[in-house]
Length: 218
Ligand SMILES: [Zn+2]
Image (tube, rainbow, N blue to C red; front, side, top):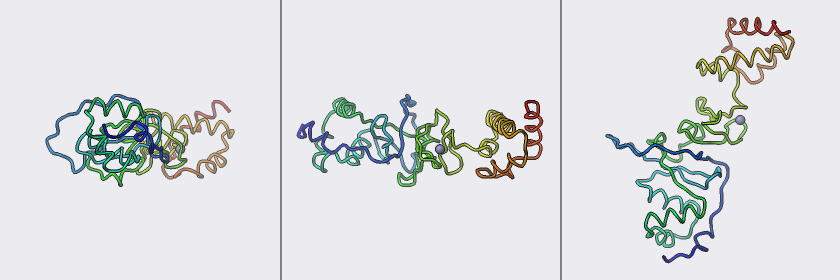
């Protein structure tokens, strides 16, 4: 090869919080009948939130774009890297704790249009749109509309609008707890919830049910 390991290492710098792929096995490639407008790969440093989406035609194309993104030399130097057989290229990436993975659920999107909620919808990690902390699809991170939302930032109305049984049970539990904490003072509970919730989503029936539950403990 024409590029030294030192050169290869030279410009590797993690960028700002973007996204992280959890260490999970991705499904094997499946033949598609209609090719999407874009085929998205994601790549970055293992464990870092510097992962980027790339519209790439193959694993090698994604690796090439990843090397370019992280400044692993100029065009000629990267071209020299790309003359390595797959196995050696994988070893080099591994040495620098870098990887690329296919992200089929992002296919069709332009890389510039891929937002944190797309990362969560793809089963990956992203920075919470509300508090900027790192969150993961498999650890409480949720895509709510056009937001990625961590577990801590998930509001009562997010849960109710989610509509799933688990979400509604969680919402009920949260509201009952808050009512108990506030000694069933409905005005106080309403005032607290109003700060971060769309109160029109909480129905009178839901409110009454939770109040009845909370009164058993107050
Ligand atoms: Zn958050």
